[in-house]
Image (cartoon, rainbow, N blue to C red; front, side, top):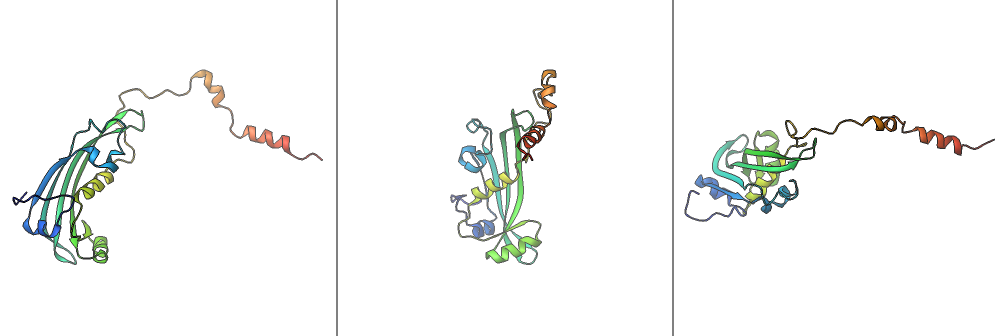
Length: 185
């Protein structure tokens, strides 16, 4: 933190934080971020390492808006999720390194966001940094969590005795039913 005062990441004054070039960092327990916690393997929340984050405030040039307030956000987490191949827990590292610009008004933010490489958000009097970091971590979750190489062998194809059952045609029963219920002349 750049100054001696306490800064609440849930009610951040982005304008003064950026003007001071302040920094802020900390750790949150996974259980404190309910939406992110809902994505992990059940029972692993208490054992999860804390989510580490760091934020730097700055004034930077944004095309179309000139010098604007900005936050450079970095966050790291390691989550236990379910591998979609073997259904066993898999450790998923998450990394967020982004810059966000802040401008007056939702309309200006939306218009500038379309053109900018970085995200552009509307300036708010009390910005919830924790919600932003949770959003970014959620966006960095893999669509299909899986091991590079699963620790246990995957189930083998059907055994010989089940092969005959697997060869049954799914619509054969429907065709037979149709023949039985057809009107007779």
